Length: 264
Ligand SMILES: Nc1ncnc2c1ncn2[C@@H]1O[C@H](COP(=O)(O)OP(=O)(O)O)[C@@H](O)[C@H]1O
Ligand SMILES: [Mg+2]
Image 1 (cartoon, rainbow, N blue to C red):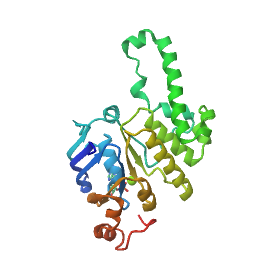
Image 2: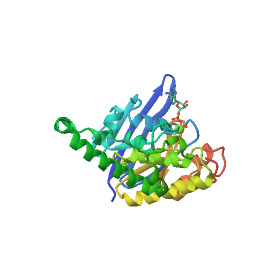
Image 3: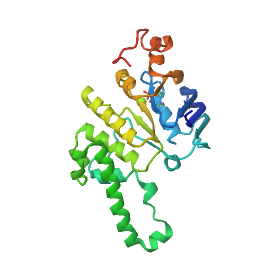
């Protein structure tokens, strides 16, 4: 049986009178690609924000790899091994591809006291290693970008920007990766392309576990191993893709119709 890597119990986030996340219980097994779906405003991004330390939960508990990380700061959550991308792009457009990726690498960039004393040599070595790591990641997602890592991100297409955001999330070698609508603003074909790349990257890193927020149910069916459905901050159900699309509660949440590929 797979090991449970992440679990939350009764996770609740209230913004004043609005309950954005209500007593959420969720387990994620190591190696899963969990699809997190639900109508707009159902609490998906809030779940990411609460787990990654942007908001402190009103109630409940988050356990990652056996450790209670409830209420940890974003840095501490990242150091524990959870990285994320954002629904709205957070790249620094005037910085280069390499610099943007390195912004996600503060975990390994600290040379420590001894490193600082012998700084110059260590710094050169670290730089060379970091360029190598960044190139390795870029090669996985778009080999054509390898030769342009010092170009500003502003020159890139939307899909390449998304790729760079994913590289930035991966550079710190997370064990759990949260992707918040990585396909936002892309065409259907580009979305399919990016998802194929995510799958290829996942098979390269077998221990990586992914939570993917995505509206297109066809994509969810294609790439996920399990799904959870939120509605008004509550979990409607979780299970295989087939079981959630056949669930009457899910169909009701989506305008009382049968769930089809483009509706969610
Ligand atoms: N910082 C915040 N302050 C107040 N309300 C918020 C905040 N963040 C999210 N919400 C509200 O919480 C609900 C869930 O939002 P969100 O998690 O962004 O939904 P989703 O990602 O599923 O579309 C929405 O009603 C949203 O307006
Ligand atoms: Mg959202």
